[in-house]
Picture (cartoon, rainbow, N blue to C red):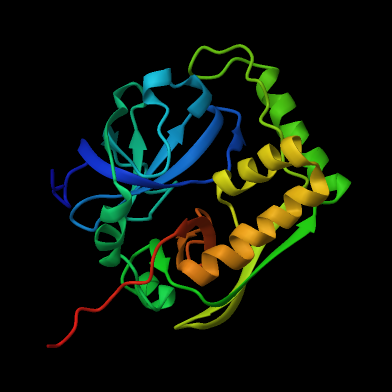
Length: 260
């Protein structure tokens, strides 16, 4: 279902590529910003999604294809052309992109220069990083307290979805990032991918912190760069020229067909 670029409301179907780390929102509870790509190669940034408030049948993951109803956000709050405010109750999982389908589906969205994309009015992009180096640093106690205070503020009052208590998502004590190169030069960007933080917390519970960090390095620092990967980038809502890593995707290198 293609979208009329002049429409202010509508329905869309797209494949979820990114769930950015949840943010504490006084109005909407624990909200997640989702980035999805449709079959026409168009991006959709949908929010606010209160993931914990979704029905079990609605709880989508990466590579799930979803349908949803949307309306444009107020221009004063978000001018990014891909942004859409989702109607929470409308979200429906309708399929899943198979592993063999991912490379051709995403190929049309991979670019060399996010800065050039920004000049064309885009605020979401996929890039294949050159010489990627996975890094992490321990968050300070002040940073951890800031996150905890956000959840305490949410739990102190009901949110829009009628929930009086939202169980806080545990914040990872580490901040993960990549140093890499692309068509615009060298970068070192923090990763806001929710699934990366959740992977660390899951492995820490299973193996302990030291081994969990070693596994993070093995997967994101060695396996992904060797086998092929792309970074999903998005611009900051208030500083729409500032690109951030919002997703890390394992994706085989694109094979060019032979000439003969």
